[in-house]
View 1 (cartoon, helix red, strand yellow):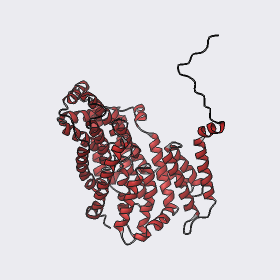
View 2 (tube, one colour):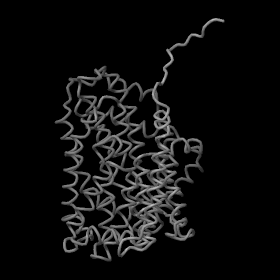
View 3 (cartoon, one colour):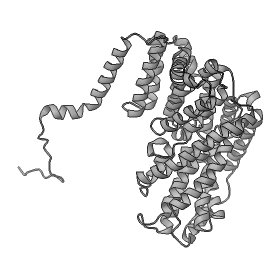
Amino acid sequence: MEPVEYEQPLKIDRRPLWRVVADRTRRYQVIAALVLVTAGLFCLEPPTGLSHAGYHALILFAGCVILWVSHLIPLAVTSLLAMAAIPLLGILPSKQTYALFGNEALFFILGAFVLAAAMTSSGLSARLARSMLARFGRTPASLALTVFLLAALLSFVMSEHAVAAMMFTVVVQIVRSLELPRSGSSYPKLLFMAIGWGCVIGGIATFLGGARAPLAVGMLREGTGLDFSFWEWTAAALPIVAPLLLFGFFLLRRLFPADLASVAPGLQFLQRQRLEMGRMTIQEKIVAAIMLLTLAGWIFLGRQLGLANIAILATALLFVFRVVTWQAIESYVNWGVILMYGGSITLAGALEKSGAAAWLADLGLSGWSDSPLAVIAILSLLSLVLTECISNAAVIALLMPIGISLQGSMGLDPRLATLAIALPAGLAFCLPMGTPANAIVFSSGVLKVREMIVPGLLIQLAAWGLFMLTARFVWPLLGMGM
C-alpha cells in the first residue's frame, strides 16, 4: 500500500490535554463566568435608593454591554436576549417590554435603510459619485476635496456605512488607475481618510446618516412626549457639521499631503465608466423622484404625518413602481442591526421606567446641578469616548435614560440632553471598530492604526470644542437654552 502524501506536513499538538481543552473552550469559559457573576450579583441587595427592578435592569445592561463589546454572541442576539430577560427578571411586564420594541423610530430606521438600498441597487448613488468626481476632481487636491464632500453630502441622505462601502469601491479603482505604490505615497491615505471622515461628519447632520438620531429621538418621545422634526435636528447639527468639515479637510491636507502632480489617469477611468453606464434609466429617475419627495415630506410634513409613516409610504411606492425587489432589499438591509436597535430601545426603556437611570444620574451628576453647561460637557464627553469602544446604540441606550431623567432632578431640557448624547455618539474617528465607515476605510490596507488614532484625536478635540460652543451660543437661539 502506497503511503499517503499530504500537501502540507501534519502538525502534532504536543501540549498537555488540559491546555488544549482550555484553549478550545475559552469562549464557553468566558460565557460561563459571565453567567455566574451575573447570577451572584442578582443575589445581592440593591444599593440604597435603588429598587430591585432598577438594580436588575442595571445588571442586565452591564451584561449586555460586555456581550456587545466582546462579540461573544451576535449583537442582534444580545438585544433579543435582553428583551426576553426584562420580563423574566421582573423589571417590566411582558406586554410593556415588547411594546417598546415597536417604537416609531425603529420603523423610520427600517424605511431609511430601504430607501438607501434602492439608491444603491438601482445604481443611482454610484452614478452620482462618478459624475461628481469626474466633474470636480480635476487636480489632486480638488479630487480629494470632492471625495470628502461627496461622502459627507451623501451621508446626509444615506446610512454612512452604505456611503462608505460605495465610495470605497470607486476610490479603490481610482487609486489603481493612478498606479500609486501601496507604501510611500500619502495620496491614497488622503483619499481613504477623506471617505471615512466625510461619512462620519456628514452622518450626524440629519436623521438619515445613521440610526443614532432616530433611536435617541424615539427614546425622547417615549420618555417625555417631546420630539424633534427633521428640520429642527438638522438646524441643531449644521453649526457643528459645517465648521468641522472645513477643519477636517484642512487637517487631512496637512497630515496627508497630495504628493503627485496629476490625476489624469483617474479622470480618464471615471469618464470611461460614465460612458459605460449610459444615460439615467427610468428606474434611477423614479428612485430619485421618490427620494426627493420623501425628503420634502420629512422636512415639511414630518411633524404632522410622522417620519416613520412617510418612510413606510415611500417604501411602498418603490414596490408599486417596481424599481426595487424584495430580494435586493434583503441583501442590502442589515436586519441584525434593526433587531439590535429595537433591543437597545427596549433596554433603555427598562432603565428609565425602573428608576435605574434616575439613580445613576443622581449618583454621578448631582454635584453639578448648579451648572447645566458642565452636565452637558460631561454627557457629551462620555458619549464621545464610549462611542470609540462600544456600538453607538449601546452608548445611547446607556446615556439617554440618564439624560432624560435630568429634567426632574435639575430641570435640564431633555431635548438638549438628547443632542448632547446623540451627536457625539456619531463622531467616532480614532479606531477601526468605532464605526463601520472607519472599518471599511481601514480594510484598504494603506492605513496603519496609528495613522487613524492621532488625526482622530485631533479632530475629536475640535469636534467637542465646536459642540460646546454650539450648545452655549447657538442652541439657545433655537429655543433650547440652559
